[in-house]
Length: 228
Length: 228
Image (cartoon, rainbow over all chains, first blue to last red; front, side, top):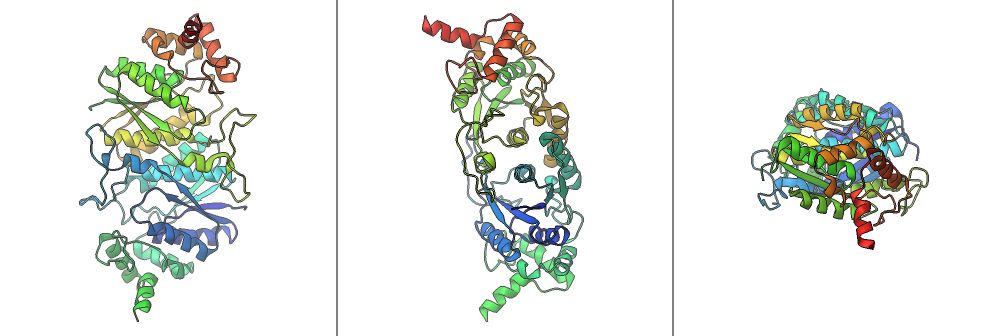
């Protein structure tokens, strides 16, 4: 396989849009995708990523990371906190969330890119809307790009096409790229439900973006069609 | 446990010396250590790290990383290279070696430090002698420190006390810090042998450092004592 770009594909709306952005930018046959199996609470994300990659006809690699589960929820510290299931009530994040997690994903993706002689890495992070994550911000990504270039002695460019886009703008970009059909296979719901619960913060943010863009969400359409 | 500093402890000579540097700098009871179980070829490294931590009486955490084995040796690429045992004949590195690996170790260590409210991270990397690794260089570590600070929104300092030291200087530092007894429990040999093979590049580099410092290697002394 000869690829020019590697996309970090989570199975969500933004990374799926980025996959199609990469196909438009680098050309069909020049793009591959990587997904991390890190013990995410909702295994459905992995299924979605696989379906999206198949939809886009790009080679897809799944890499395991068992470290977050070991680090998660402050387990393993000497205070004896047990690893708990579920999400933090305040942050709505799974307790396998670890600060700087995105740095890990991108560094492993960079290592895979290095091995495959790929010099362009694409990630769907955005500092608008989802502004709670410091490891998704432009300044962080710029510092990481520098660390990766120096640490691997390798010319690598991190592309973040959605960094400053609103959710509505991202929906319009997806439409223009022909990514809407693939968005029917993406996963957003914090509750891990299919059909999506429609009431969690992630579902509400997604719905707001499609509403503001004036476009029907293909994921919602899919389940509406099923129910008919 | 309340610690001020976290040391990345591989079970080797340099990280062990850094553990004692941290104890001198931050005080007994203020230091803990983390070791990564990443599928290293020689499990003896993990045993050495545990013995050194016990020797120094510091809390010790072992974190698993299964990703390198999945990435290793260009396995998982579409060219169908099988995962092979053994080391690369040219680099003498295990085929689980991945470019930028040290970036991963330090990022996971930073996440653990964040969870424990530790603001000082200590690593034994050096750009002298071992100059083959770009992810052990000063410029890389500076860029990574910036990425970690921004990505975790956390005040974190990376300490690299051996960065510009020769092996002989490191031996003298270890002596001055009272670390020589602990060095009897460290592991260096590329062949994974105890007693060390004495002929691999790592054994030769270690022997040269002790010889230049004019100090007997406690590891060699230990096996000499055993044989008597």
